[in-house]
Amino acid sequence: MSKPNHKIETKIIHAGEPKPHIEGAVSMPIFQSSTFEYDGETESQTLRYIRLNNTPNHRALHEKLAALENAEAACVTASGMAAISTTLLTLLSPGGHLLIHKTLYGGTYDFITKDFPSYGLSYDFIDGSQPETWESLLKPETKAIYVETITNPLMQVVDLEAVTAFAKKHGILSLIDNTFASPVNFRPPEWDYDISLHSCSKYLNGHTDIVAGAVIGRSDLIEKITTGLIHLGGTLDPHACFLLHRGLKTLAVRIRYQNESALKIARYLEGHPAVQSVNYPGLETHPGHRRAEKLFDGYGGMISFEVKGGLENAKAFMREIELPITAPSLGGIETLVTRPATTSHSRLSEEERKAHGISASLIRLSVGLEASEDLIEDIGKALGKMR
Image (tube, rainbow, N blue to C red; front, top):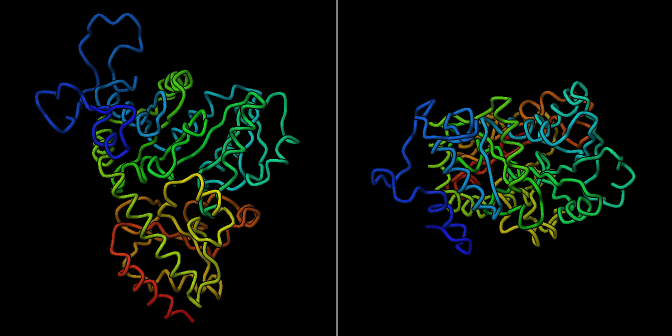
């Protein structure tokens, strides 16, 4: 049994586990049943049904995820974007206005800029490092402020403490995408965030074999968001619940190794003569390093960088690299490399990417569990073969 004062390593293993174990099974079984026998329930949402997000697999995950961030409640969704879109559409009614950091995951940016108007919603972009400018964008209909813990793909660390202070002062909700940090490195509810969002496809699952999302935070808000999720139909399948549940068990050991390995690789890249710049909050030269040092228990496994020589050399690096797999997504046990302009941010126009500082030659590296020394050797060989 997990207790509130247990360390996160213990909560990862024991929080949310059924007691007593079901038929003695130490591993949580898969309840691959769309419906369950009626047991006298008097309200529609207490009926057990996959779409209602309340099968035994769902409930175990909800309790575990809430415990990992020391939050009141949680719910899982069919994807990270299901978590983001359902949350925003539930908490922002027509006429509502959102303040949102200007550099975001491409899918979030695309949803807000392309779909918000059709829902009667408006938004303004903020510079997350300049809280003194936010009040000028505040409107009577502003309902929430939204940031990412570590931004995708530039690895910025915005003024996360100022976000919650601003939200409390003005009576609006604070929302944060905590995917890149994970609960091991940062737990938003501990810093007064109302809602923490995750693409569980990444670090929480960690094995590149499912797509899932999570919403963690205040119980009253999670209840509303769960109702919205039921209406929109973005519930996670029980088998995917099982895989996420299983993947979570190794979260702490994976993240701690990836923190350590990414810092070694970032320092190597920073010192290499073929590298123009490196974005990693663990580097002392990173503009947000002091914030990250204060707030985080680790700096994460994500690095982005620019090589000298621009796009052609970036393409050459991608061709020459051997161990990292050239693929979108991140957070798995294998190291992945991509150019965000062609994957995560490909739906943005060239002008939009340029406005947010995302060049066509930017390379993003998701550090996996391979030996750091092997990855560094491979990166060095690829950099040495560029023109």
